[in-house]
Length: 336
Image (cartoon, rainbow, N blue to C red; front, top):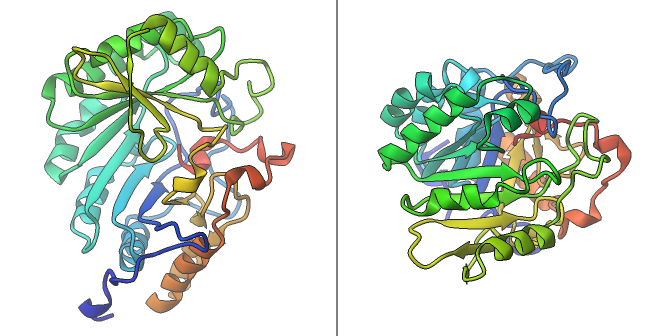
């Protein structure tokens, strides 16, 4: 394909005139934690008949996405740092024409091993998921006694200050909902964002129906009870509500991951661990672009699969199937 066809000036848009420019790629379904809202202890990380995408398959995919009009890539999982080639993937994505930013979502456990290589590869931003700042609760949520290591890696990121950082906190009723002030206090000096996220039903049949869900309105109420003087900022993307406090350099936000008030602004595609493109978190089937890559299909055919996925994007995630059959899926397979 000639360079003139790379990153066409024609935006990649869905049928509701939303420009799609962001792809989240789940590079592995494996994880070194077992969070109660994501993955059972005995979770099988390999889907029947599939294997995780190879480095070459992923770089081919990223090139196709860029040619279609994607400009932002996020590598996720599972836990993407379990891939020994993760820094090479970041470097490859950064060197792909048309890709402007490459970011990564991690639980932080392996950052002490991978961070220097990621920095050398040119990583643009990191999202670190940590749901408690207390060792005992961290153990309860993740089933792994690794708080000390994760917290040390978080502290190093904070001390560096050279990589934009967002901290993701899944809010769980009766478990960590009294830690809001501890998390918002992290934003006092460093210009970071803490995002309080609603629980979602993709939890491997674990806690979704046990009353641990904490909705957007309740999270907002808790924030105001701790910081009555907080000021609302203009939210962007999934950060539907964003706030700061006078004298704080950072900010915090609420991500209504289940309530999904932000569907009208959604600009993303996802690539699941099985190589299926999905245009909405709640889409069940998707389009198997990995199978097409493995068959050696033409670049134009691969581009058409991306365009087809975008055309299938629903106007509102609430209109897609949220039935019981979909609730057994783990976010580690969809891309957290």
